[in-house]
Length: 164
Image 1 (cartoon, rainbow, N blue to C red):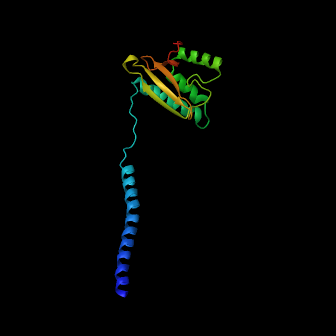
Image 2 (tube, one colour; image 1 turned 135 degrees about the vertical axis):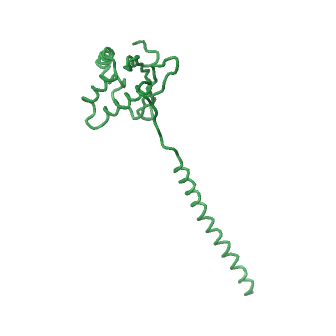
Image 3 (cartoon, rainbow, N blue to C red; image 1 turned 180 degrees about the horizontal axis):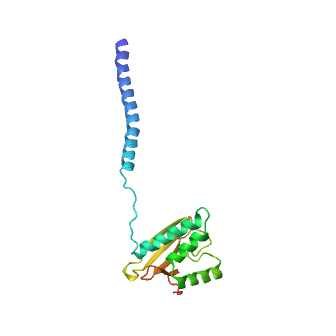
């Protein structure tokens, strides 16, 4: 009986050691694989050029929202960004819209969104872009923003809006 007991113990120990090795190696292998995949991800990049209307609109909205939500928000920087990016005649229309609606005329809202996306309208509107503003989990606001040949904003509105 002693010999039977002795021959069973090495088998159990071998199975136990093999199980522990497999249980330890599997998560380590998955972790290493996940880290290798994460490390291999390409860094993000943004491509644009000052002569491209979509780039200009994206630059304007990014800088404008930073100025509206950053330290010392609003004020002189917002005014200067408007003067730089918006045509003077259209700036008067934005200010009139703001008086009527008690909201920011560039964002068409009372507060600053959490996220934004700018997408060109394609060949149908080479100097127009759709600006999508998102505040949270709710529905997003889509604005159509148009620029003239001199890269100045000449229209901000919603699709189908007839206030050009």
